[in-house]
Image 1 (cartoon, rainbow, N blue to C red):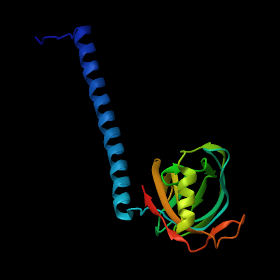
Image 2 (cartoon, rainbow, N blue to C red):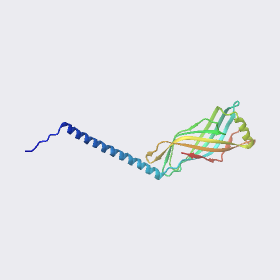
Image 3 (cartoon, one colour):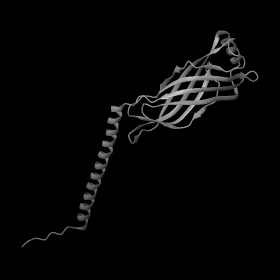
Image 4 (cartoon, rainbow, N blue to C red):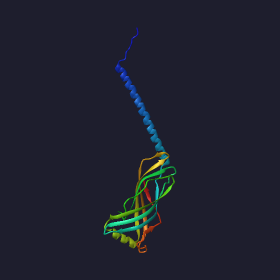
Amino acid sequence: MSQIQEKSPQHCAKKKVININKHHKKLIYTFTTFILSILLLILVIWFILHPSKPEFALKEAEIYQLGLSGSHLLNSSIQITLLSKNPNQKVGIYYDEIQVYASYNGQRITLDSSIPPFYQENKDTNLLSMVLIANELPVDPSFGYEMGRDQMVGRLVLKLKSNGRLRWKVGTWVSGRYMFIVNCVVVLPFGSSAAPGGPLISKQGAQCLTTV
């Protein structure tokens, strides 16, 4: 006589739970493997292409106004032209944000000026022109003395600084945002030979230092 074994409802429920858990684990493993493969592919592409940081150069600077109103309030108007170059062969650059200002002897002499966002193709160059201004900007009381001293020497040294955020583009893939900083130094003639009331102009150009 054969024995009939009946499985209790609890036993069936336990077996079902085990099967569901195995199914969930398989899905999680497959999904994790897929994500890791994508990340590894992106990392390999990144190291193969290895994007180079953009290059900037100052082409021209013109100071139309740089004088004190009272003892320590500065009015300034400076026009500059920057050359931006993407040195990469296969990588494009999205410039999402660029802020530029000028300084003299460690003091800001203009407010921030913004450059509209733009995209730069590989091996492409762009000319960026802007006007940096300030109206009654507070400066150190020694500012007038330092300007007079530099006029006696015959030259004026300004620093231009840019802060911004960029993204790399490889094919259809676009990276996250990276902060970059650009520092330029320009030397302008500033002495008795300069035209009274006329702009101070430098067209010698200067290479800038870029940090990403």
